[in-house]
Image (cartoon, rainbow, N blue to C red; front, side, top):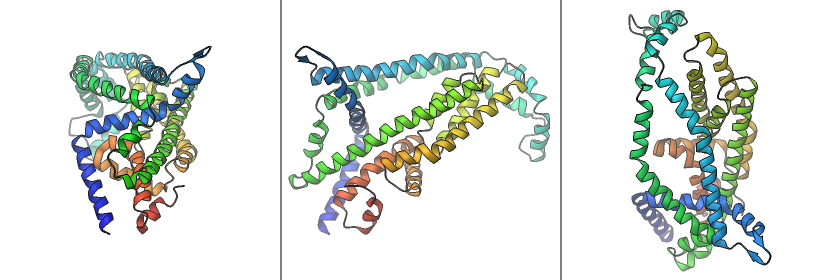
Length: 363
């Protein structure tokens, strides 16, 4: 009993220290996850890059893996950022006063219903209200303001990227370095259990993130190809955004629909209202259909092979994570919970609740 109490106090103290140094801990953990994702690239470079009796060393393979990560990031940015900025410039140049007058006709019947339910003030129309909202958020200085805000945070972003890159290089070069760091702060008699917990966590997280990449890629491909076949503009951009937002449990697909509709509206915003109705319906139905497919086939496969937790359990964990950390908490909640389950199974298996929650984990 006393031993368990000391362990709980130790974990609480470790969490308190981790919270105080949250940014540093985040850099280390992000680098650790990326090192697991980069392990296949390390093996590939070590085996394939050679000249006669010379083979690429660990440092060279780690450097090439880092370059590969940055090339992928740069490719994504160069592929989609110009399109997004172009859409933003287009929205900022629209005459919203003229647009509001154009929308008054299509929204006339809807205006009457909203006035009956007191959802619009007397004399106000949905068209004019849409005009006010759009002109407020998409003003001519919008792009400049966004770039200015980005520059103001560039310092923090550079520090974060530099720190993660530096740590990641050594994690890739020495795949046991993270284990050595963890073992250096635990008692000698607990090393075996800690080693097993870290190894098991690494395996499960690797499976989880590998599956997440497959899930995101399949979601993106299905949405983008379907919208392209249906003739919806910005199909690839909508597919990528929907796939990335799908990472956020439960609310991600809804955000994907909102973003998809946004890019569709931005394309047709100066056209007749009737022209954008059909593309909007196609976007909504396509993302919804792919979500149903994802929820019933792809998603359950990933959970059953990585997290090994009941869907209700995952739902509750997601709600708690959202309460504690918002959208970021929802994204990292499941992998964090996965690690905590492994630790609980290794050190607190005598508790009935722990045995019930971790019973599906394999040894």
